[in-house]
Amino acid sequence: MDDSVQSDDSSGLATRLHSVQDSIADAARSAGRDPSELTTIVVTKFHPAGLIRELHALGVRDFGENRHQEARDKAEATSDLELDWHFVGQLQSKKARQVRAYADVIHSLDRPSVVDALRSDDGAVECFVQLNLTDDPGRGGVADAELESLTERILETAGIRLLGVMAVAPLEAAPRRAFSQVRAASERVMALAPEARFISAGMSADFADAIAEGATHLRIGTAITGNRPVAG
Ligand SMILES: *Cc1c(COP(=O)(O)O)cnc(C)c1O
Image (tube, rainbow, N blue to C red):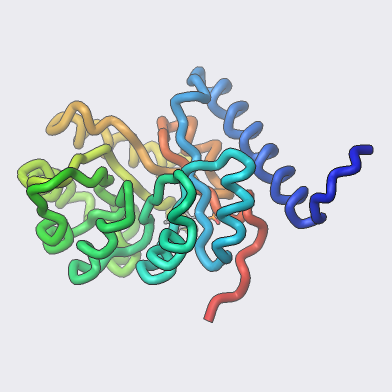
């Protein structure tokens, strides 16, 4: 027994974090990959900034949020910490420049108007082009048929550094199959931009399948944070 004064909650957090990290390393090794090539982003949406501090104390440096105001408020509240913010939610063109002000990486470029809004002559923001794996345009992501044209537009735009492809596996499909589509999309993007070799894919329920299909950036929420508080 150790006599540390951790609350049950924070020791639960450490346990979940370490267990997910172990599963990620296992999935990487079974895919013949080096776990150190993977970036794990902890998605903290709906959780208070205090959780970000606890995770930072446990060594986490990459955090994800999906709503602009919440993301901005938490980035402000934790501005004394050294960490990287990943914006993973749907992005409106009128909010894009504001997101750019605090986000280190934007995972959700999915339309020309958002790309144009991010144009800048001072410094580049790292971005993923998001692919929609469903037929529902409301889900976010560019339609498969428009992947190349959007990629070209991104490559022509000053102030954006394209990292690769992002996607969310649809609930109704087998994740491994969905992620193999993402891998194929990644190859199409790399044909236009060989350096854009990263893949943002894999969440709490499906990260092992994503790793098997080449994901480099995992976006993991509840498996680490526990259930999200109910949001208004
Ligand atoms: C919430 C969210 C995640 C994390 O989801 P979990 O199932 O909690 O791991 C990942 N990606 C995006 C885009 C999200 O909105």
